[in-house]
Image 1 (spheres, rainbow, N blue to C red):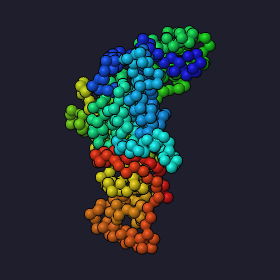
Image 2 (cartoon, rainbow, N blue to C red; image 1 turned 90 degrees about the vertical axis):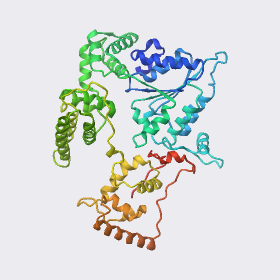
Image 3 (tube, one colour; image 1 turned 60 degrees about the horizontal axis):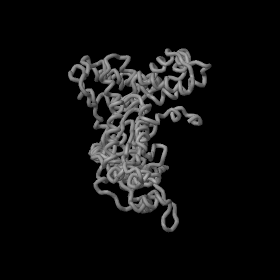
Image 4 (cartoon, one colour; image 1 turned 30 degrees about the horizontal axis):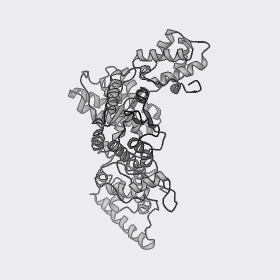
Length: 512
């Protein structure tokens, strides 16, 4: 331990007696692991949900160590495609460990997968043959075989949960990251929750932070003032990992004793920006009753000012109990929208600031009746598909050319294509057919990307003109699609294909 330079690892709890906070959650984990001693529980996996730094994985590892169990761990820094998960986790969960003690009948291997909310892609499965070849690294002729990104990762994770004969614990910060942001997120949730018991972690209490700070400083043989501990707790949002890192930084500048002045100086020089997911953030925002809290909470939500305007506008109508509150909120949002448009003028720096603050105020102080029960903010439906003009045929064709996921195409590529095709003096021109011809779009698809209503006479004339260019282009130069190396597998789950989940990513698209 003395040779470990990172204090978060050096002081990571090695036993449950070293853990602090989330006592109820720890009891649930212990009870679930105890069930594995005598058989297989009905839910063979746990999903630990909570903000970073609250000790989700530390709890799991400490309890497993107390029980004398081996731990197989996979996190976001490792490859997490179908082949990697099967090689490390699935095989480990269906076979006995190499270090299994045959005299210990109740010994298990805990499979721990951290940050599963960062596991990208949909539920589309990769063929079994390709997974096995990727595990081996080559096929029969000796050609290298690999899976890119997180290809097939979620499908293999479901396979792991259904087949495991060992306890599996998943950990994530934002649960919606695991379910996905598409319209089929509830279907994905239902398929996972058949195997999962969800346990939600809270941020550490102030008393828990005090005890951990004192324990770490005593183990490091550093003297401290009680006022310094209080200052550390006051500037910490309940993040245990951040607390230990702060202590390590302060120890490098300490001249023998940790003082309150040192903590205050460090807090002033390195203010920590904390952020959280949109759903827990909105819950706090709608419960806030004063402008200062609302602005602070709004800044912590992982959404840009224009996104905040959309989310607040959508949820106000469903959450505010009185029409007068909705009206006041809409007036504030109207001003927020006008301020945001200022980014295209000389007031760009102020527009970004004020539009975000006004959006936060629209969800809080405009409602005079504080919320007491549970709040259910929802995802704005009009943002799910990003645009009613986004035709499925365009998405399908772009996916076949590029190998990108549907989500990446909608969010990153389609806005660029639309901007280049929409009529504007500075950039776009709907009568420039070069890009659409390159991708082989139809006339209607070109008009849809240009944002033109298909029922207008002018649009129909443009489509006819495009079709003429398309036919002439085929005669003069036969259409050749952009060459892209596609995945080798030919089989896929038909039911998953119907879901609006991101498809397997197999490469990058080059526009020009």
